[in-house]
Length: 334
Ligand code: SAM
Ligand code: SF4
Image 1 (tube, rainbow, N blue to C red):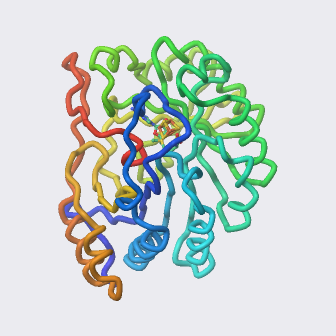
Image 2 (image 1 turned 120 degrees about the vertical axis):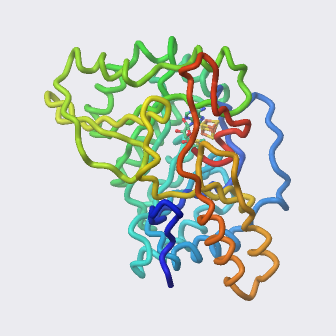
């Protein structure tokens, strides 16, 4: 089958799939406190998710990341992981992985490892119990720490993702760095993006540019830029004194679109070919309307990728949240 290539000659080999819009946390930068979630019938069933992913894999996708909402709160999700494991066994997929808030890892880490998951990204912005409860509204830090223990005990490689929030975790930069060093975890900082429905002023107030964070690290450590890229937005440095790798996801201070190899599909089967643009196409129709054939689905995938934009327009430089998106991050899964 002809591989998936977009109009800017970027090969699409990475699918990020959101399997639910629900979550057991309500992080302030991601969701409002009272969310209206989708009715169940809107969601793709696990069987439909399987067909969808398998179609992408047939078209050349080599890496699948499961996200949400919180992927591990979807009922029977481990069955879906199990089903995707067959693509690892057959060599269709190089990697099956997930992004999680860690709350359910104590339950699922061993099963995920047995299925063939090797790495997990766990989102954790603070090591302070009170601050954790404030930023996640509903989360409890000890539960997540237990999840991290379970993941590492199962042999999963863990990367922590921390959203850099001005006036919130600025003072924990070196605590997070030391925590990850002591536990041999990778660490990536993410600039807060203008998603969701927080007021604009509040959003800009939260913005802590990673150039600033990097400058603080450079005062204490010798930083070496690493050329390694994952085709994604992260750039990495090594702290020479500890040997640690630290990543920066800087959609707002650095444009990374030229090497973008990914697309996102929501739990309702909408494909977003750019996180920072509203453009989307429907895959649920072709998936549901022709249960016996994948041809219409694969046509729709190809058509959507044919419309992948060159890049996003996030921009805070004019003192306003330019390029702001109205949808929540939990919708496309980050
Ligand atoms: N629930 C899972 C989790 O928290 O890891 C997966 C979904 S969550 C939407 C994926 C990632 O998006 C998390 O690392 C989260 O911190 C990040 N995120 C959510 N809202 C964001 C925003 N406004 N700006 C930057 N990152 C955001
Ligand atoms: Fe849930 Fe993840 Fe969004 Fe937090 S960032 S509310 S854990 S989906």
